[in-house]
Length: 336
Image: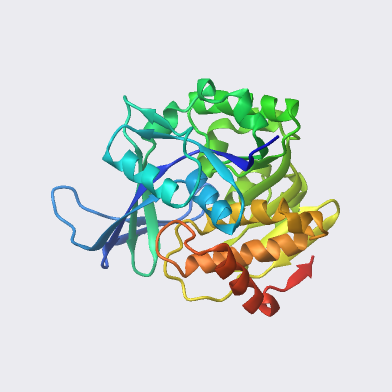
């Protein structure tokens, strides 16, 4: 009998948030059909003052696992950290959030992954990524019992060669044991593995993409066209201030984003993905909750995360339920 609601597979990192004042910005006009780029310029050989510097445990898989656990699901995380101080901080945070981290690999050759988030007014951000131990996660770390012991499999970004071998093994085992796969990739994973991912296109119960990822995967720009060609039986596309969209069968839905005072946008997408998976497969779903209702709740949780500091949802299941109830009239579901 399965012990966990979700086996969550992907990255764990330490996120560093470096907030600057106004620094030089360079705009490069689009060429060859590409959109214009906005670049931040930091000169070598000089010092740039920071207004603040914060450290938070993060990573897309860990963030989503924490969101699910806080909302009421039992989660196990399969990830990798380094045998270092940052790795111990990540593990302690997972323990504090009651996520089962007993199968998080401790790599003694690579350091814990780090995401260096550089932000400046008016809220623009660039991220420098050191994947570190995340890249060493491979098929040898996945056992059949891990899949059998979970009712659902939630997969986030897996980028390296070893990661992708793990991903292929995970898909095979999930099929063998009839475990639904929720696929929530990153743009990095798509850029690295798109042709191979398309070959296993029909293997996912739910696919959750942001607009950039979805557009890249299917080569379309209109949201309904993206939803039609994504690889899940149920497909979801989030689009920042525009809210989110979903498709089940021939039905398409849209829920607008809640207007909230944004404290920290980091991790809102992970909270959204984790919340959608949790609500879609919860007991509420079994009693008749629709995909559209699930979408509205996930949009609500993403908005709640935006009001909190750090990359992880910090609210309890009760607080989340109260927040959604208070904002139910604003989380209107529109058929499109």
